[in-house]
Image 1 (cartoon, rainbow, N blue to C red):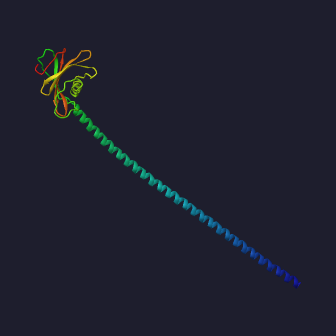
Image 2 (cartoon, rainbow, N blue to C red):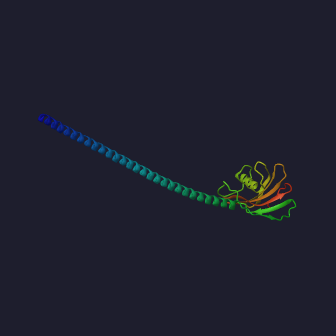
Length: 220
């Protein structure tokens, strides 16, 4: 009987030790899993914070890039506007200069010549010239004088070089000429009076629209 009690106590003691070991094991295992769980949560939060920081940095960079782009576009637009304004000013000035250069005041004058239909004077500009130095009028056909005289006559009569017939080009006085021309179908005749301006070329001083060709000289 006492032997049975000893065995029973030994079994109980062994069982308690085994239960204690199991409790310690499962407790340790539970602690391990809790640690793992906290570690996973911590890393997850850290990853979220990293992603959030990255997203914020990316958003900030995009905002900076957008601001720089807007500033660049604004600067380019300002430069374009300034260039446009400058271009418009230059165009306006050029247009005014051209308008001033082309503004010719023509005034009708009386004539006692029965062959003259109408006569008028104007502030026409000299035609320009390629000639230099002391000028002596060359009346030969094809000379610089004849070419420049024809161009000046064409401008004031409206008859093109191709349609113009030069009936006579002669002396109209000191450094002056008179050109009598018509169009090809002889429906319009003109006496054109020109004076030589040094460096600037021939300048028309008076135009007469006439009924028919009639040779005219400076003494007429």
